[in-house]
Length: 138
Image (cartoon, rainbow, N blue to C red; front, side, top):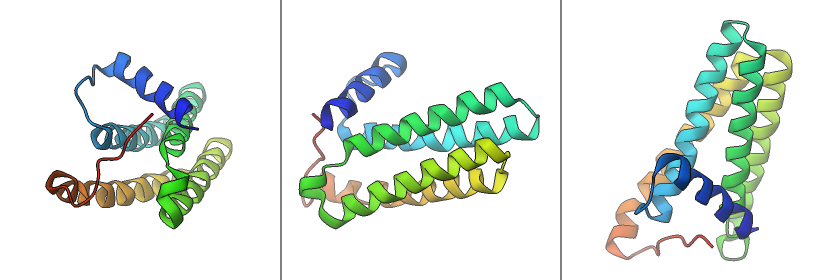
């Protein structure tokens, strides 16, 4: 599972030049990528740009897959399981949004990812102080 996540991070590194970022920052970039793609897809829906909408929603779903691949299911326990289920739910909502041009589904996914991101960034001080170990990506 980690190998797939590593490939996704490597691809992001090549595309965005994120060398020197730690795993916490890389996960944050993935979360930002979902929020950005969802926002772009909303504009494509509103402008009736079906091809661009599909491409953008597909990119958001792929990024969600990268986030899922980064989860450490062995050490992450219940939190990792719940995040995995939530990422599945968000991908399903994105499929609905694409199929039905459902802006509310896009808004829901954007809101959920933004909330997860706030929580994720909330642990940064504990990582910096050494209370919480820096997540390791394979």
